[in-house]
Image (cartoon, rainbow, N blue to C red):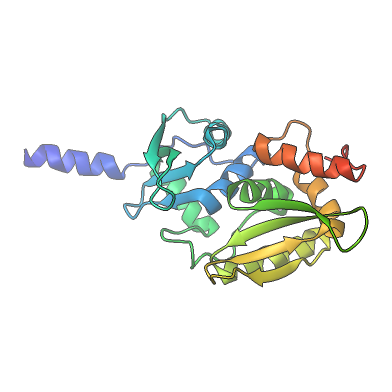
Length: 230
């Protein structure tokens, strides 16, 4: 029995190499999803990604070329059923630590090591994870249609890094605000800056994305005659 336990411990710590670690647009997108909706277990091996959109997990699974089952659980916040995928890979876990992700990352997350070439693919995953797109007709001016692209994080260090990186690569600054309940930070890009940022995020035909959010953005752009921008 002791020998079997010892063998099992060795096997548990052995890298499984389920995920092929090679930067690509799809791989960077998956890292963006893990950064926002993912969770790293304290055991140094397992991951968890949860979303209300099953498509999100199907995209994630396809990007990492894994075949793990997508299950369901009850969200502790909303008490609604959400979709969930779990898997273990020691080698991938160690890679994520090198990139800058950690367990219990929500308020401690900072700079991530994302290659510039794939940053906007990462950012698309970030937007599909915790980000949002908000549009409305502004009653203060006749026929004025406004919209914002918004990135969200509970970590000030991470949202500061995100703003700095977007400024470096897209030359737009955005505007940083704090949620009314002080639970998170919002990095907001209004219409003019969004028209610069969105084509970079959705620059590739057929790039992996959350359909619901992408179509919402497309409809807003169509209202101002920019439907073909992405």
